[in-house]
Image 1 (cartoon, rainbow, N blue to C red):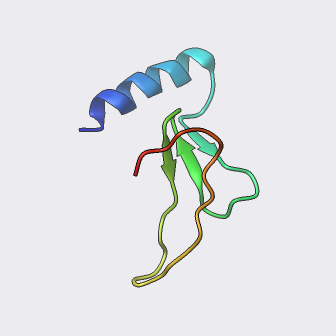
Image 2: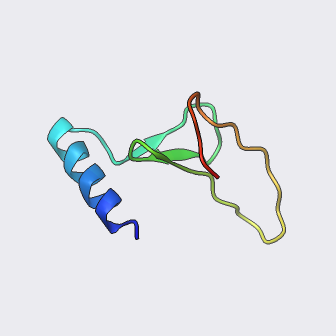
Image 3: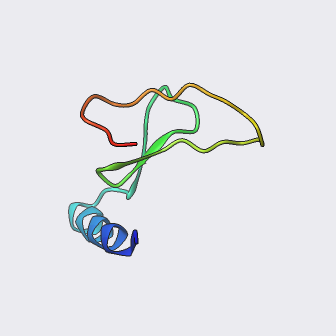
Length: 60
């Protein structure tokens, strides 16, 4: 289901000369994947962590 999003974001990133993966500075292991997806991976089973979202409206 993410293929259309990844394809279009990849084309925009290529055209603008920027990476599809955009690190969130000062946030350990968090990055934006394109313009609309925040990735905050869990490293261990059962782990909990605080995720700080960039400003804007987010959908769970």
